[in-house]
Length: 151
Image (cartoon, rainbow, N blue to C red; front, side, top):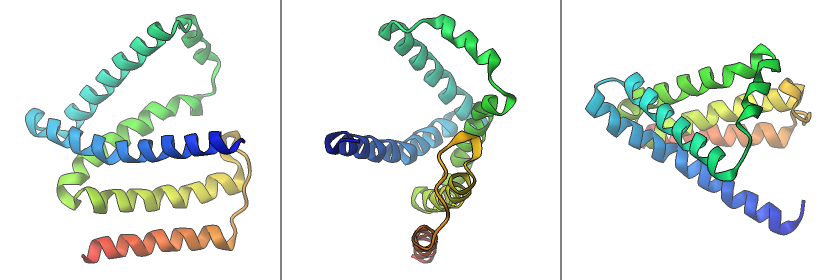
């Protein structure tokens, strides 16, 4: 990977990370109007679906490729379920824990599962063995969660 591509990827990853808690706060705001986190989540997914369809059409990508998903294994279809759980859970958690604590715990969960996914190469991702620096990174994230919880 070229140096410029790495920096571009870094910026996109930071922006994606910044979008998650912002989305949580926005979806929480919506839930105060519709009176339930699942209503907020379904509206969020609906808006996202329309936006993605608009992108496909604007980019001139062939819609027929969507039919290729019928050949995907069942596990590949669970992404929507995982996303629905995530968005609904976040909308429910934010008013109870706050955005910072919610996402520090979410990041901890992400780090723990990424160690296992990488180590075992689940779902055909490249294998990256669990090692001391990676475990130490998770320990530091957990320490950060404890600091957020305490203060």
